[in-house]
Length: 199
Image 1 (cartoon, rainbow, N blue to C red):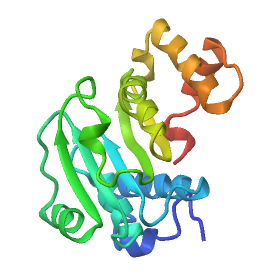
Image 2 (image 1 turned 60 degrees about the vertical axis):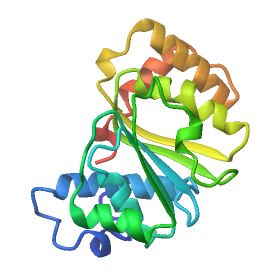
Image 3 (image 1 turned 135 degrees about the vertical axis):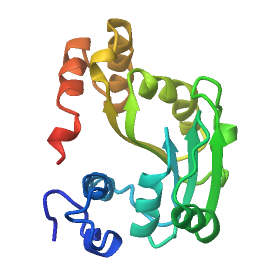
Image 4 (image 1 turned 90 degrees about the vertical axis):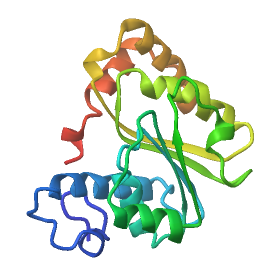
């Protein structure tokens, strides 16, 4: 059963975290998993690319939900180390693993693909400012030509988006949804896409 928007696996994946200090992050990750599942993206065999992965908390959660039946690419410009347990689980028990230390502006899909032609799903729990647009242009759009690809992002720092970037989002949204979007409509979409609407 869905509780507060969480994925049905929450009690199995996060035992005892309901009231813990880490519980808020665990709940957000579980909501993320539920949204992925509702849109047919939480499937075994998918390669998840976590953009701005940090300590890989989201990837670890998805790994546990899928019982390691997926691959994970962790992309961040800073060298993070997650907990030993999660690092080991993702690296040694999942179907594929790669940690890429690079700026989004410099990375290419060749750096991120583990299984050529396989299904890709880019995910990010908090991706700041114009980083989503940059990742779409640099990586995801080129990948669509050769891979089934999807994107699920919970953005943050919306107030840092400049008018030019919002205009580019309108172009990307029009391409995604097959219908024209204006910058004003995209600005409204950005305003309602914060975690407050998911928690």
